[in-house]
Image 1 (tube, rainbow, N blue to C red):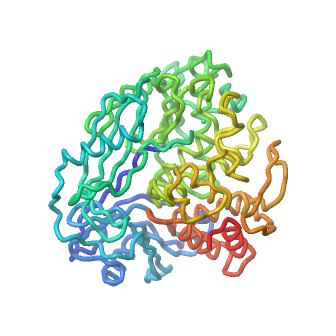
Image 2: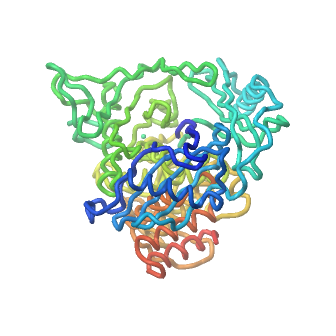
Image 3: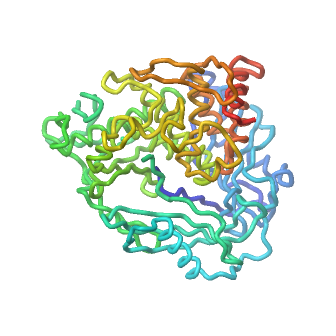
Length: 547
């Protein structure tokens, strides 16, 4: 549930190969161990810049290309992993991202690349004009919302080099946005061949998964606030000044692919620092859930993975609640670095501020700052599954008696009219009637919320194993695709392996085969090659028909 994430690049400085010293710092694997001896962020970037010069040919870098640092991971043992985005003649390269791996002394160990093909095109002058690309994208948005009369449809093309879909080619990446009949936003990113006008790919730009104060779903929860004069603000100074505001049931205005906030999230304030009533009659109640979800997700990533904030830079995000009219959705938006929650229509969904929804949405932000998994095909399924996995682990981390951890997604927000007890079921994804339990060559053709089933199934089986068990008061049944009987390694190890794979090994083009490799590499790093955990990862991917 997140809007399109943008790839940013800059020109290479030295002979086209020296790295720009920009990017975000991801926390170390084990923050407490050997911190004094660990290379700094600046040292890691400097070492990686040297590696780019020495290994340019092997990495496919040329003087026409530029790089920028997106993320840095320094392990407790001093290993360094520097993630780059790439440009070609100042144009962003889709699928140009790569991760350089360095030993503690800074020597080059290897790299993971989104593409191993040559990143080069004959000409950066498009045959298809920008207005024509915009028109094609607007038409694609309308086609994707057939039966709905869209209003205020606009589209803004950006010229890019596409290296995700075979040989590199010049393309227009166009974000088309509009509003449905209720004024709620719809958006679609369309990738168009800039020479032929043929559509290369398209995906929804709003990633959907369909969510001391008294909350709707979690009982009474602790909240940090800021005292301003004699008034308390729902702003948390201990978590990067994360705050929650009221969107007043307004929606955003989008012009030429750029959205301007008409829902400015007026900061919630209170006289006595006791927020909400536990009912929807008080507008602050949904704000309690949203702020609590943000806080808990922040705490999970920091205490479990050592990540200081969603972007790893200690800066807080913010929440908008009461967005739109009967809006059955919630989404993370990179452009505002914020979470937005609808109130639901009361029939299908209630307010979408449940804890696992918050964890899901904010994890899209983590993905965008790390692997940036493309939101289509198998990569899109892995993107959605990553959010389901971490949203679930956030729910377990909270340990709330009012909302105990389970492997159901969004079970708190669904209403009887939805026809199911949850949005998705990680133990047996096909229970929703649409998701895939097992990998096949056609999985990538499914909507990303359903192709995610393969990874969700893997995650459940890796943590809990096969067979029936009651978790969080809910009956679960872990089936396998090959009839194997599996013993789980636990939730904590699942989270550690997936987080390491996401932040160190996955790239924008990672598919299910690549996810198997990435998680095996992560398990090897954490527990050793041939360890019980390493073998469990291999067996579990086989149990969902991957590998």
